[in-house]
Each structure stands twice: as C-alpha cells, then as structure tokens.
Amino acid sequence: MKIGDLVKLLSLHGASFRVGLIVGFIEKRHWRADFLGNKTDWKKIDPEPHAVVLVNGGKRAIPVIDLQSVDEG
Image 1 (tube, rainbow, N blue to C red):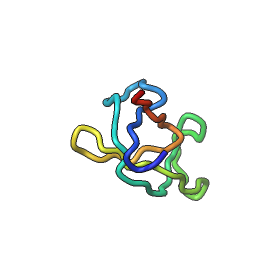
Image 2: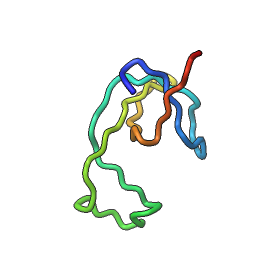
Image 3: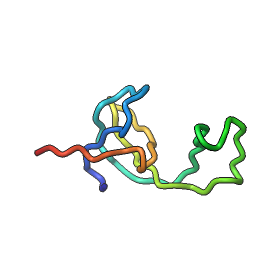
Image 4: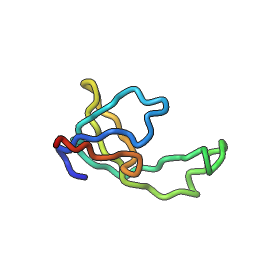
C-alpha cells in the first residue's frame, strides 16, 4: 500500500465507511482487546504501522493489517 491508494476495511463489521484514500502513514500502538484482554497495559505492545485514511472529509488512523487495497479495474 502507498499514499494515494483506495482502501477498505477487511471486515466491515461495525465499519462506518466502505472506501477511503490513504494520505499518510504513522506508527502507533493499538490495543487489540479480542486477544489481549480488556485491561490495557501499553508496556506489552509495540507500535505498528497505521495508514492515515481520508474518509468523508475526516482522517482516521487505521492499522495497515486491517486494510485491503481496492482494485479500480
């Protein structure tokens, strides 16, 4: 994935958008309660790559692993 790519979430469960545009990348921590539990301990996790995605005029940081490129063809 690169800046300018159209992307969508791999799972649309609870998603509020279908397609977004990557405008940048950052590294940040993301607590995944589904396998790390509800009690947050930021010392247990390392930062992971996130895409900054433009959606409906706003920006969202979304883990790259949760995104899929949209093929325009």
